[in-house]
Image 1 (cartoon, rainbow over the protein chains, first blue to last red):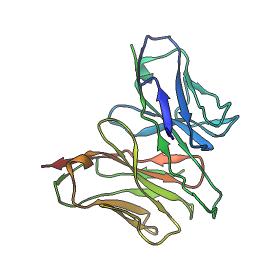
Image 2: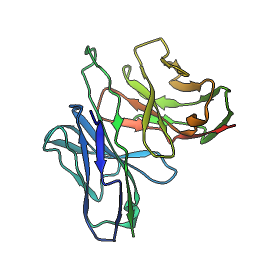
Image 3: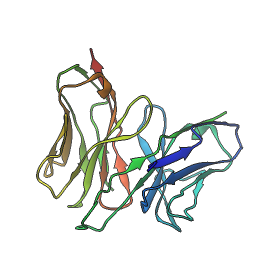
Image 4: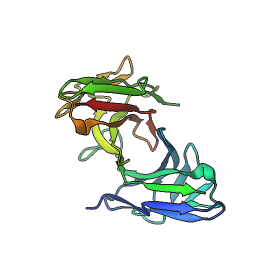
Length: 120
Length: 113
């Protein structure tokens, strides 16, 4: 059980280039998230997904796109990279049960190791 | 909208001593989860402890415990017998059984030998 994996670990982009950050989870979690963390700051939600085929914007979605064709994968696409997108990107997943659900009712988020992106 | 506040940007503690990190939050919901996450220099986010709002008993995980005051909307983290490996950024987070996790700005904890 690898948990949440992210690739690549590091990447340097030139202004205007595009790239896709990969995220995969093997815990059969229905919810997945993308955050960015700027130096010395907390996490900001970019996009999230509550299940395959469903995505929605978070706090800072501009300049990014996502898709969720399978439960396991939630790639984040950067189009026309800008220096303001220099950040560390975290993917996370969680499994949500209705209120009062039994079994593993955790809503805990499990995080990937992060991708450090620099745009020059 | 829910908000999470951590009023201590930085804290320090002597090794083997006890330290308490503060967190307050704002919500109109009655059922929700609260979390403390640790982020060491490796930048990995690691779950420290979680608390369900409907439970009155404070959560405990080994040297980590919380003081959950629902009426005051306060959720502090106590670290006992602090170790050098506890040095990290600590984030308080809120989730109301929905898709949105709200994180506080973080508290940087230093552990002095």
